[in-house]
Length: 233
Image (cartoon, rainbow, N blue to C red):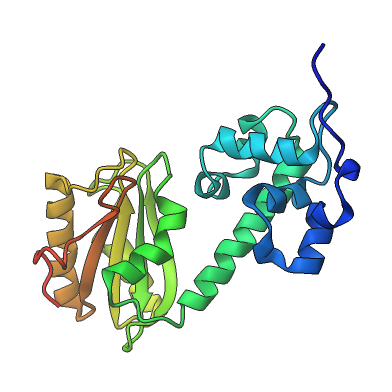
C-alpha cells in the first residue's frame, strides 16, 4: 500500500513556507517553497510542497516555468487547475516587469545588458519574435516594440514598421533582437541580409541601428552583430 504524503500542517510551524518567509525572509525559501505559497493547497496524497516540486520538474526549470502562459502551466502538470496556473503566471509576470522597470534606467549600449533584458522572455519562445528597443540619446530604453512573430522574413519585418515606431517614440537609436527557437544563435543568410537592409535604412533616417542580437539557449547564449563587426557604431 502506497504511503500517504505528510500534510503541510505536520511540519514544524517555522518550516511551513509562509511562516518561514515571514520569520526568515524570502531568500531563505527554496524554489519549491516559494511556488507552494502561491499554489496554497496540494492534492489528495500529495502535499503542496510535493506538488510544487512536481510542477517545477514538469516544466524543466524555474526559468521555463516563468516563461509559460497560464494555460501552458495548467497543461504542464496534473493537479494544477486554471486558478493556480493563473496565479503563478501573474506572479512571474510581475517579477519580469519589476526587472524590466529597473533595467529601463540601465545603459542598453552593451550586448550583455540587452540579453539580460530580453532573455527571460525570448529564449524559450517556440516561434521567432522580432523586437526593437527604442533608445534615447543616452542609450537608455524608451520602449520595447514587437515588430513580428513567426518566421522572420522581409514581408513580416519591413523597415517602415521599425522606423514608424522609432519616430513615434522619438528614438535616437535602435537595437534589434530576435530569438532562434532551435537554440543555435548562428546568423542565417537571411538574418544578415535583413540586418544590412535595416542598418542602411537607419543610416538614411538618421536613426542608427546600433546592434542586432540573436538570442538562443545553447552554450553561447546570444550573437551580437556589433561584436562581430557586422554593425559599426
